Image (cartoon, rainbow, N blue to C red):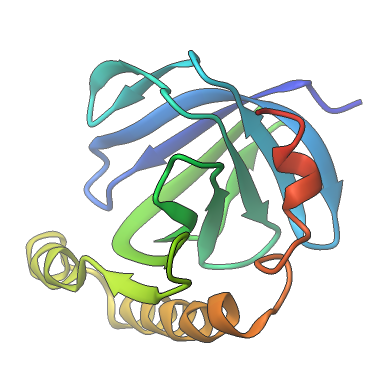
Length: 168
């Protein structure tokens, strides 16, 4: 039986710490593994201790180059997708991801979908030596998400709401 608590570890391509936090396994379906993080959860952000101020649900897809974070108000981003390498699971209780800088975000108030951190992606591509296939996968994932977050594709339309209700 899978663990109720999953440690989520994001690193940058050079192996440096990015994010690290515990999450509660909510469900697993054809979309991926749904994880819930409550307000007050101790976490690490860029190697420094932190505390989550707003709860969220994280979808870790089975074989995609992204993760999706679904947020309640007052967070201004309703959906925040990190472009990342496909998840590497260590047993049932730890998931490893490499953050590839690009983010696709849908704003709550306007529904605007935007690509963020292209400058960081270009900088890290040169500094860390992202291979061409990693660059191509990251860019393809971002392009797909730019469309999906705006056109009603699940899980970005409403599928996440039942899971978000469990952590708010």
